[in-house]
Length: 502
Image 1 (tube, rainbow, N blue to C red):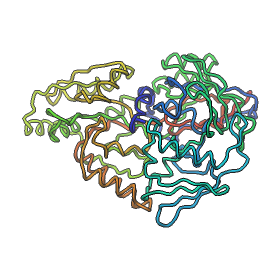
Image 2: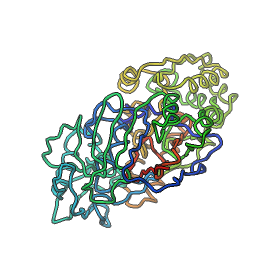
Image 3: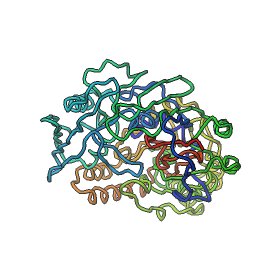
Image 4: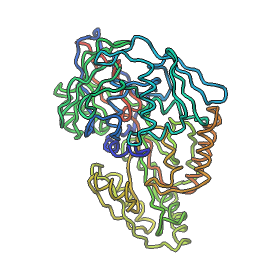
């Protein structure tokens, strides 16, 4: 998942995943419906990017995580929007003092959507399949698992070495529990244990989830949630004002006055792990020189970028404020065009010409600002706006680029900076070792400290530039309650979403 491969489809939300100048996360009022929630309500939610198919096992991209995890599929543990690990199909768990053995108590009375009972053996089979099937997304996150066994309702997972990210990985695709031997066509159908069943998929239009009446936990508040795929922001707002949508995610903050004009909608702003990342190809050429990369960073007015896109916050390192290991690294790349020009001169890179390769679905705001800022220090920047398949082939796969901009939405994805084969092309053995030590730490405090140390080195190396840390911006009907506001581009649990009739 563009941690490894998910960027492949998450990037489309970038232009809309901005925040607001006048609002900091949590400052917008959460809508409160005046009437009682209608248990038979159908709620329409606008999303930006539709998945190509529904196979959560083998198809990368946050478009699937966003709608299917928590709602249709579940694992032993789950994560809240605030990144807390909580019980799900496991009612509780224990961890051995050496960090090698995890014992999960599997919930009883759980059924899949086809009516079959969930058994501990299903858990063992699912985890084993995910670990051993290289084609499954995030299979490598379970490579450290040396044993999986069930005894009664207890499933014991043994690790070959401590892994501070193990529970986090189980809260994602690696931990999804499927029915052993299920014959469902995962590309078009689903059979999970969550509060919703997949009711309908009209390709090119919408995906509808319906409340699962046999759900083992708290039932979904609404009878039905329809995810409507409307890429264009203006079209989405028009649909909302026409009463065709109840929630608009990825909302364009520039349209705030229009959406709130008649009092039927309010804007809700939440934190996110969205990272506007400017990648540098460091394999050869002028960008192989740290001085050139640092010059580019100091030539960019990050505050102006945040202001131009409607707000958000600056980010000067690879870890956003919501993730473990975050540290304010603004002192490492202060805006200083004169210092940038001096670095370019020192590197013998005056009159430099570079190309920015950017997916064509992004607005022109970021490229225009970069062209202007770099021109002031003597760098001519050509913008090559390409369709996404071309970007994937040229940039992500072949690493054939100078600079590239994409919004990375996934939480806790620092591992990309420890992977020299990733398209960032960043390679530092010290960072790779620190990340490995962080993964092997048996305390969260130590793991976070090591991550922070590694992140500082990446920023000191000018491994990339981070133009901004975005936020989740959502327009919500005043009839709707329970809409999550944090990290909605990554995961969107709608089980608590309700709507009143007035």
